[in-house]
Structures are given as C-alpha cells and as structure tokens.
Image 1 (cartoon, protein in one colour):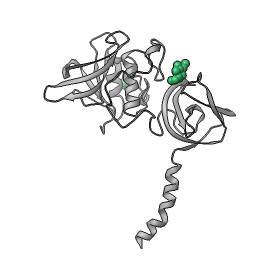
Image 2 (spheres, protein in one colour):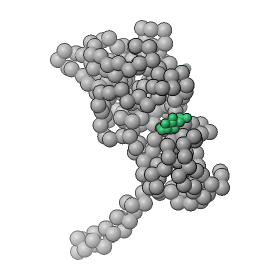
Image 3 (spheres, helix red, strand yellow):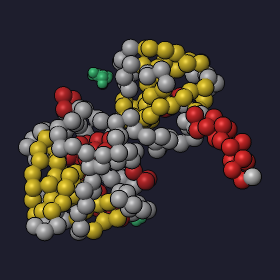
Image 4 (cartoon, helix red, strand yellow):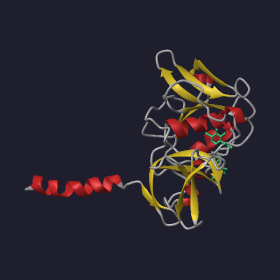
Length: 239
Ligand SMILES: *[C@@H]1O[C@H](CO)[C@@H](O)[C@H](O)[C@H]1NC(C)=O
Ligand SMILES: *[C@@H]1O[C@H](CO)[C@@H](O)[C@H](O)[C@H]1NC(C)=O
C-alpha cells in the first residue's frame, strides 16, 4: 500500500525537481540581454522579456552591474546579470557556481582569470592581481561560496583585516590549524597576506599554498611551516 502511494507521487516529484532552479525576470527593464560571457561587452545571444521564466543552470561571478556581480547561466547557455532576475537574494548564489566541480581544494594551477587586468577591480570588489582577489576567486569557484569583500556584511578589506572580519562573521572559524581549502593569513607585511591552502602535511606540520602577489602581480605556490601564517580561516565550518 505504502509502495503504491510512493509510486503515485514520484512523477510529481520528478516534475518539481526539473523546475527547481526556475525564476522570473523582474520588471526593472522591458528586456534583458542574455550574453555570450558574464560581462556587458560580450555579444547578445538572446533577449528575455520582463516576466519571462528563466531556467538557471548555474551561476558565476562577472562584471558588476548595479553592484550585482552574479550572472545566471540559462538553459540557452547565455548569461543574464542577476540584477534582472528575481531570485530573492542579491548576495548569494541560489544554485551551484558553473565553475564549481565539487573539488575543494581543486588542482594546483594558475587559473586566475584576471591576470591581464592588474589594478582594475574584480567582481568581488578587490584590486586585480592582489592576494585577496586570487583567494576570492578560489573561494567562489572551488568552494561555491559567494565571497566578496563584504562577505556576511563585514568589511573584509585588505588581508590584514580578514581575521577580524572572519571573527565578526557567523559560522566562520578562525584558528591555527590548517585544512585543505581554508585561507592562510598573516599580518607581517603592511597590508597583510592571504593564501589558499591546497594541502596539509600533519606529520611535518607544513601547508602547500597557492597565492598571488608575493612575486609582484604573479601566481606562486610554496610549501611552508604551519606557523609561517598567523591564522587559518575556515569559511565553511562543515568542511
Ligand atoms: C568579457 O568576457 C570575455 C570572456 O571571458 C573576455 O574575453 C573579455 O575580456 C571580457 N570583457 C571584459 C571587459 O571584461
Ligand atoms: C568587527 O566588529 C567590531 C564590533 O562590532 C567592529 O568595531 C569592527 O569594525 C568589525 N571589524 C570588521 C573588519 O568587520
């Protein structure tokens, strides 16, 4: 009896599952351009009308549009700025990041996407080619967390204020024990430094980190003692 009832329900559940990332275009504009890339200079692939239903496949960070840095990739494989989509939230992804492959910490490689635009401002409101911008990209793409320099309402600012901002942020843990996919921080230099922890050797008490701007404006990786950093910031307390 129970089994039969479950069978009766399952087609409906399947239907619900297929529309779970459906949203409507808001009416801030008559039309919204869906573009080839998540920025306003790339080609318009399709136009959606106000009120039209949008099926979001995944989301990425891109050019800021009226302070919204999130772009929604639709089923048509084009990008709409989230400014025009009624997802109900403005400061978080409502579905997975298109570049997130569940691979925290992911591969060691210089895949920083803004390396040719040093000193401009990235989607997360950091200066491009600085350590903070690189780590912001890692958090967004390797953890699927929408991290900006206003994460959880706090002013993360330069690397030397990340620990204070982290301590002010609910659910964020600050300690001296690294784990893969956490943030390493020290305040030895004037503006401090942050790096992405790729792996941890517990026996030797070393961390392998990836970072930007230790070599000016460039990527580097190194293996150093745990205490080469003052703190480790864990954004995802489940991790
Ligand atoms: C727009 O995105 C494309 C692809 O990512 C990139 O080549 C181009 O430089 C971007 N334009 C700007 C202004 O960021
Ligand atoms: C942390 O919170 C304190 C107390 O509210 C505040 O004075 C300080 O500016 C905050 N700092 C950061 C970086 O969020």
